[in-house]
Length: 474
View 1 (spheres, rainbow, N blue to C red):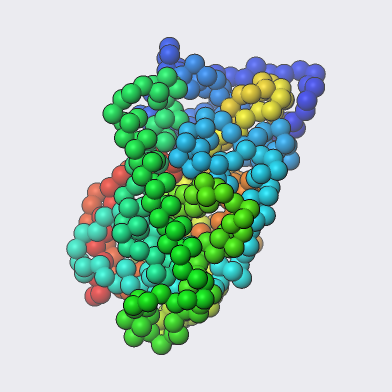
View 2: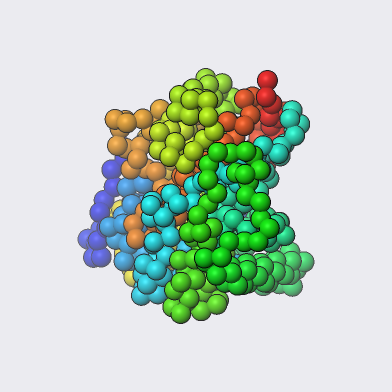
């Protein structure tokens, strides 16, 4: 393992921060970040533990060693505030949601108010509704027909999340608008992150379209909030046929508490949130639900088409737990290998490839001077594909996560961040991914790749550019 120096405020000697090669006038390293982002970000590891790049004329300092990244996120987090160019851009989409709001009292207050939504006991009350929703959607796929897996994983994960967030009677037209709006918004956000700021301010068609999508997203979120607040929590929806009943499932229909949805927690505290704050938090939660979860599931399915031994081991675990009956919510805790498979997909493919913080003062990071106000970049993808911590990182090996394996593996895993800004929805994400993967395997005994192997494409997450899989029953 590479060794690094501690952070200090008054270093006696400082090494110069090496600058990545290949920068151009005006745009800096933006052309690399647009054309070859993953090879470029990975190549920085060869130049040092901290490497200087330029985003247009603005310098940024990329941390390539996970020990220093943990320093930035945990031990010296007070000196590295959540911010930087990527969060400035995302704030234009999310507003001041939990992921983008500045460090301080507001963030602490909002996180405490939202924490009950994401404790394990609360999430457990939504599992049955999510299983039913996933089963109804996955079961409706056409047998042996090529399926755009990433698009469909977006649809399924969003639908399952909306059932958990807003309740089982969420209008289909609003769900469809969310599905259409979020992917292009996130793709444009990453483009604006790596381009010089003056480009994003020009009245270009792409910039205008981005602003229109943001306005429409907020209008749709407003409708979702109004829909939820117009129904008393104790009133079941009229004329809604529950998916479990449609499928002849022996499980009982959801209780009134399950019907309400996680967002009920925020609605109950609405005197502490303005309407815009409710919008901001809902948008933030939905993006996290779509981007990370759908991407991980799409890559997981691709890896299963490449590793039939892993697929069969997953199916054997599911069969042993369910014993021929449909999946139930209490089964999820008995599927450890499914969790390992998902964690390895998240490890190998990111999900995020560039995240930023902002230095709040001049500071020595690993023997290098970081000036006050500078953007500090860290990359889960870079760390999670570092051969010093993950031997043979290109190999898909779920047993990396088996009990008793080397702690270095876990110490270099940053998919959900770390420290006081660690993703509040991590527990929910694992539950949702396990539900969808298990439901899909339960519904379809066979899957095969019918497109060329996908190439990694960067947006906020790292997604497959083209991935078609056919699902069959025999």
